[in-house]
Length: 139
Image (cartoon, rainbow, N blue to C red; front, side, top):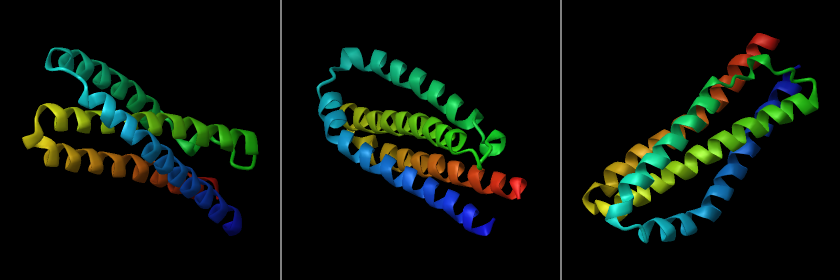
């Protein structure tokens, strides 16, 4: 069982590394698009980003690996894809918020970058912790 437990951890780490690569691919486009936002539209865009962020956070943080049958590969990969999509959406939205702050309020950029980075780290750690916690339950 220990070997399978390690395999699930490796799957999760691979998922998170792939997610960061995909995010890195989209960052230049997000920054370019957000930099073209005018002040009149910023409030609407901020509201939309906030709404989407709340939705994806609700999906991500209500999901738990607890109900996943890890021996069923379809169920396990479906769980990984669910968290992957919710997390990538949250991370991209956080990046958009950071760039919006950079564009409109440059003096707050370091603050936004710090809070955004800590939020992204929290998202990834929560997913990893949930996997580890529920692997202990299923032993």
